[in-house]
Length: 92
Image (tube, rainbow, N blue to C red; front, side):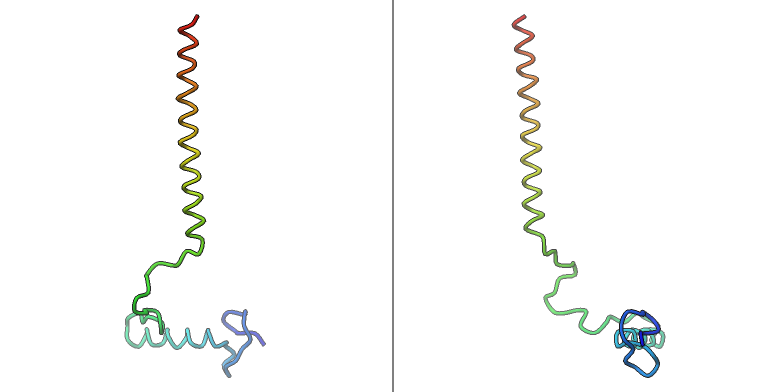
């Protein structure tokens, strides 16, 4: 039998919910009782960053450098093309 809330995991509690949904329900009942939002357990580890870890950070940096080099080469080729065009019009 699947969970009655998420329908993704098998139901493990007597009320027909999976473990994740039953913990979420308990968390919501705590929020209702206190009137404030409660952080999930283990949400704030000492020394942990607030931003998600980007596993492809090195690849993103390499692609940014590569695209920057391509832009510089394109600008250089445009400059050289206009310079040669200017020289060719002076020859005529």
